[in-house]
Image (cartoon, rainbow, N blue to C red; front, side, top):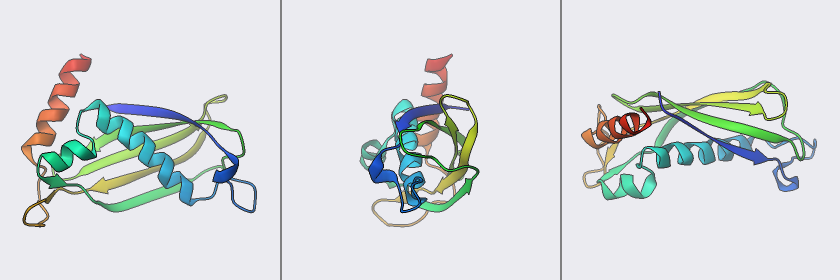
Length: 139
C-alpha cells in the first residue's frame, strides 16, 4: 500500500497541564501525515473538491501507547489500508530516536457527491485512478 510520513517535534503549545502532548493534538498530527499521503497520490482536499467529491471523516480511532513529551521528535506515518468502498488510512506514530511505538490509529472517510450531498457506497473512479497512478509512479 501507499504510505507517507512526516516528522514533528513536540512544541510547548502542544502540551497539556500534565506536560505531555494533549490528546487532541494527535488528531492534528494524523492530519499532517494524511495530507502528505494525499499529496503523494495527487488527491488532496483541493483536488477532491475539484473532482466533485467531499470526503468527510466518519470514524476515527486512536490508541495511545506512550505520551509524547516536550521537544520529542516523532515520525507520523499514514498508510492507505482500504479504498474500494471508503478511504481507510492507518496511522503509526513512533519516536524518531528509538523507533518505539507511541500511538496508532485510523480514520475512515467516505465519498459524498458535492452536488447532491449524497454519500456514495463505493469510491469514485477518480480515487482508483489516482492510486493506480501513484502505485505505477513508485514502481
